[in-house]
Image 1: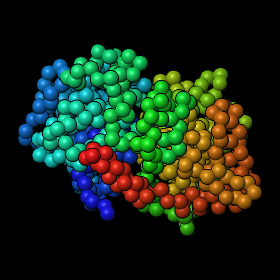
Image 2: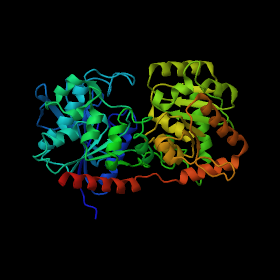
Image 3: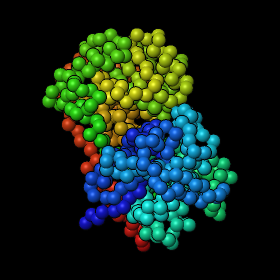
Length: 489
């Protein structure tokens, strides 16, 4: 029988306060759904400079946080996420009073990130003491919350947290929080082997070693990270912990991502039974992007972090990528929205000026993201690896057929087109090469021009697919119970 629990989410980002990727969407959506199901869920994250504290409520008492290099005093602010989930912000100007989450740009990191996120981890415990509220489960998200399971198993083992379990979610194993071994002193603990990997301090490795239960954001990715191809050096430890490792697919917040109610595309909302407005949104997107307005020409959208992980080397690296050839030799259009690595932004901007059927926006805009999902015919995600992926799930709901590499959550959610039956919800491929991307895009465009009845059938199948949080919530309830049994044993 399900019992309600007190759950603290510890994260470096959550929408709408701070976002660099899908982590932020998942934390807020999961917290809201857990709250709806009856759990007492709260979130804690840093108060970065870009989070306007004048719109938050300050807690009267300051927070004293012990660290290995002395006690830090911080302010604490609070807010309600969608008038439902309490969110707490640890405010320390010296460590968080700057623009950016992990660095000044998407491709850079702050040199004191170890200290910044150690403060978050230690501060989460002190916050609970300040609130006189002690969670059953501390749900830690990605490397920035990676020291909490270690603290829970050491200095917080026999006190108010003696029955608190840890659940750690790996959102992307490519980001591990690696620092010089000297930074272990920040913890104030005697040197712990669990913090070290290849003679460096590694937040993620510590979390995998010390957590009661480990999850990741799709079943396929849970298996992939136990291999040398995807494990990023931690595959041996993950294989050792495989009986405590579970893949749970992220759900979609359909209150935000549903073409029937999407506030960003009003008044041109549409549904699976009434698709007419989708072509009007395509015209609107073509106009905003400065492309030829032509409903018969297939339009491919991309909304992504511009990074090698997302396949942009194979897509647009100079003298290697296939994007220019796709635009020159296939009758299609591209609209790309994203920020990230400087070389990629520069190359996309260069292609924008030379290719009349490609537009690149290298400054993120949420309204444009929604318009691309709604107005595009296809959505391209040639990811090197993809722990879960959310944009392909949004695309399915919007009848925008995904073109994806068969990896991680993409493999779990997109059914490949069957040319014989017309079944499927998108187009998939295996090899990450410019040639493979070119060929699968060419296949999708061939179907657009020659198999219109199949395209419509696939759109309807995609829009009727359900990737809500319902099934995932049941699995998280089970995970929390497993973690508590391990802790209280």
